[in-house]
Image (cartoon, rainbow, N blue to C red; front, side, top):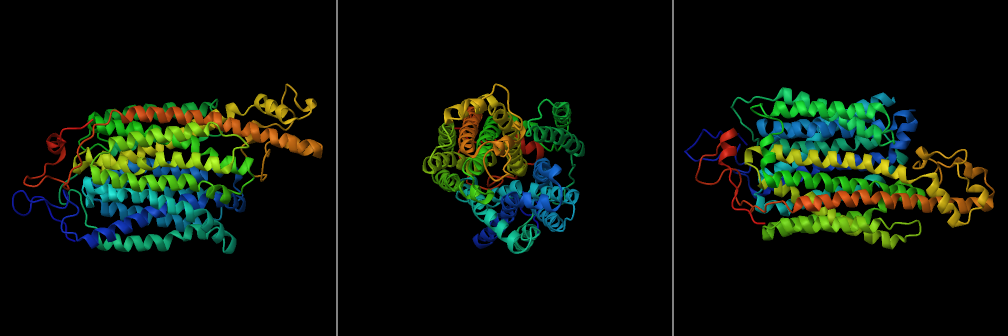
Length: 565
């Protein structure tokens, strides 16, 4: 479809840069929606298909020393690029940015599949991440372009469904491809899916943006934002291994924070800032950022331990531990879809968010009671409750943010939400692992060994040779106590008792760490009370009957209707 300029046509005409859905039939809208969801499925599937197979890949490439960087580089590049994609999509349109992002992701996938050395895999996974940074925020922004805020709830919930399907298919598909063909095919499988999405998007999606108008890209903002986020994310990634005493960790974080201060100064003067600071004066927008940060902080701090629990305490394989998370997933999918439908039908979203976050806190609080003898049924109920609480954060926060900002800044606001979500998850995981390692001490283990009936000679005040707290979360040995090498030297009659005690200690350390997630969830609940419930707009872009404003004028002219508390 040909772009329509706002300066063309009769006075008061609305062009594509104000209304991306102008002239699209319902069928075309849903075809675009399907293609966008397919593109999003690429990123979601990649995360779930690679994780379980990564130990095999690292072994084949002889890169055990760089294991974490195969994951960290993808997270790093995708997180840093999110706000840049969002702003550029507001300036140049969703279509070229989304197509470019998918192409970059497919190139990174193909190169990752061709990797023969570990440094190649890390480099190409970084390229994948650069492409993946466009998928989530622009996909959400496209839905914001095509459907009014009052309609979006019907479709935003589909994003939770996409992640759910990817979670279901990923581990099994990755194992099947690796066993029947080779691990290289877990990257190649992205290519046909991505090509189908590209064809539909290129054929049907109209472009938005300031077509034909001069735009000024905030290059200095881009540089200072990258210089700020990269050291911080690297610092927290390194700290996940318990290296908080390492000067590199704190040095990286301090350097990153210093550059973020410079970034704020640059943005306050930039004509087209990457992250417009005026958005944070919007109470609904800023409350949403705080709430989503701490909600994902709490969620990431808790859910990261459940696979470890399944693998170490219950001796599950990586694939089995993934499928044992299905109750959480079902709760997430159900509440994501239902909450979106409720918001669309009632126009009310604040009660949904508050109830959802309170439910998350309840689920996490229940998980603080986790023990080695907790039944799978009970744990499944706890996970289902937590999933019910997480679901609305996928669907409803996007509606809230997009409804609270001018149409011209929809992509920027959506990408900011994604940025706060991803940073919250990263920092939450880092703090959670630190708290876990501080909990899982020899004193705790010795206490639980005594309760399990271990002989007194094994309950020494000092840790025995072979006790390595840094390896207690290792699953390479295929089961409990892989970090306790002294177990193999014990008499067979004592080994089972020691393993039982270790399982109890491990579960207690996990449950104690869950309180971090509870605390973060409570902060998210408090932040949600500061949301102003703005009635959902029933039009796209500019209001009918008036010429849409741009830039600063648009921001001044945008006045939401009276908010409901």
